[in-house]
Amino acid sequence: MRVGGSWLSRIWAISFWLRLLSLVLATAGYFGPWVPHETAALTVTGFELAEFAKFFPQVQGGVVPVIRALFLTPLVAAAILLGLVANQCIRRPITRLATTAFAILLTLAALPPYPYFFDPQYRGQLALAAGGLLLVLLTPLACHLPRRARGILIALLALAGAVPALWQFALLRPLVVALYNAPFGLGWGLVACVAGFTLLLLCGVLAVAGPGRSKN
Image (cartoon, rainbow, N blue to C red; front, side):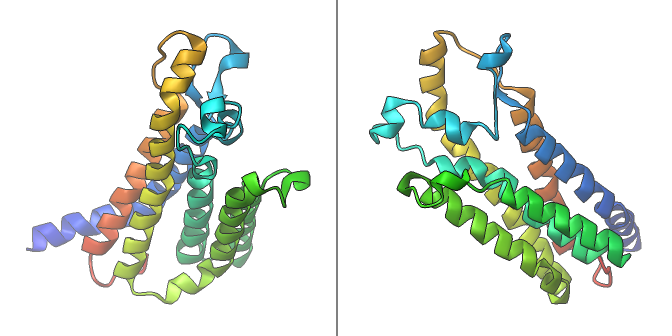
């Protein structure tokens, strides 16, 4: 039992840096190519997919049930997770405030362009961004939750960041293959984003299973 506890303690000690690395990986991957192509103009990042998808007639007509706002869930989930990490693990107030401010900026990046705020086709995107912003602002309260509850929250946010966007990408991919008239592999951005959220899911599981007195 002591050996197991010691092993969990060592893992838990590096979990803060693992969470930061995971967030960097997920965010960088989201802004990296999901649809790779040798021509830069035909390469599509995860961030661009929400707009890219609207140009397909099958999506516009509802034949392929793509919910474009769900392509933004990695960005919003990463912002909320960054707010959680900042307010749970960073002790210097200035650093914590700066990190939380950066999380807010990430959430604001999910907003639709200003002229389309009240456009019905951007309603889901606006709601997602507004909800994400509210949750980022509430992240300071999460430090009062039990550690295992925070671990469950991290795991759920990691799943929410990866699964909806992957589901929508699976629906959209055949349309892109037909448009390009050629199959394409997985972009490094997609792989990195999924890897980052997978590591965050692991962090959440470790938080639930870790030593009872850990503060992080």
